[in-house]
Amino acid sequence: MKKGLFLLFALMFLQTVNAQEKKSKLETVIIQTSAECGDCKDRIEEMLNYTKGIKFSELDLETKKLTVKYSTKKISLAEIKTKLSELGYDADEVKSNPESVKKLPLCCQPGGMKNH
Image: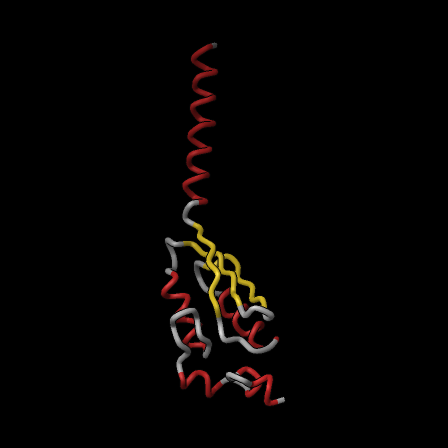
């Protein structure tokens, strides 16, 4: 009986450790962007939420801060910032790709909301 209880507790412990290891592979970061409007929010969230390794992304338009939860085993923070740059937006220290910015609607370009 004691061996059975010990085995049960050992298995429960191993499951808990395994679950914690899986969780530690996920990281949440906040990235400062150059997003301007609701179209930017939709564009950024749609692109990131369909990117392999990203579990969640949400842009707060008021602060222009993007919260991203991602798997560090599948994508890096540098890759996420590069994707944002290629989409036409600044991502912290990574500046937007100028050619990509030109392809954005006017309302999404820097200062775009002021032009309307």
